[in-house]
Image 1 (tube, rainbow, N blue to C red):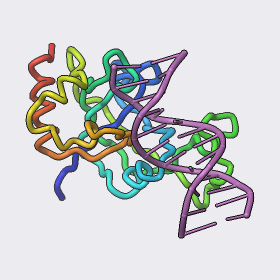
Image 2: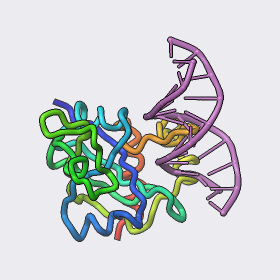
Image 3: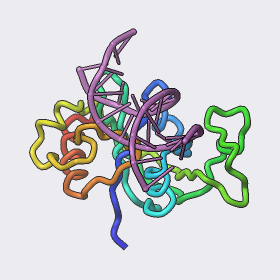
Length: 157
DNA sequence: GCCAACGTTGGC
DNA sequence: GCCAACGTTGGC
């Protein structure tokens, strides 16, 4: 079983790497895209590593690393009528949406901004850098992950 | 706040 | 099954 690598996006005013460092772990909830759902449900395994990405930020970029600590479980928000992520088409016998739990690994001292990623050789094929790419959960190659982790290390406190 | 690129919905 | 209209994402 080889470990896989992922990138997960979140707006930092909703949840940041600092929040994850404080909490230790969190459920990755509220994903409402079928392609991302399929990855959460079928592909992402305990022990996989995650690049934590701040979207809609100033600047946007990778802010740290997390590890998957629990595999797919039904996203509780889909059953909560008061949640923005409520889905009336879901029921508990056949849930539509899934979450994983991630745990804190590393908080880069500074964000690695998108434009730096764009200028880094070896990352040219990253899904994140593809024009029009919007997937909030996406696969990352091991080599890409290692390059970004190395850049993050040089920034680590 | 703008808007391009995507994804989803629903009429036909 | 096509595709126009609408909604969302996310960089800038």
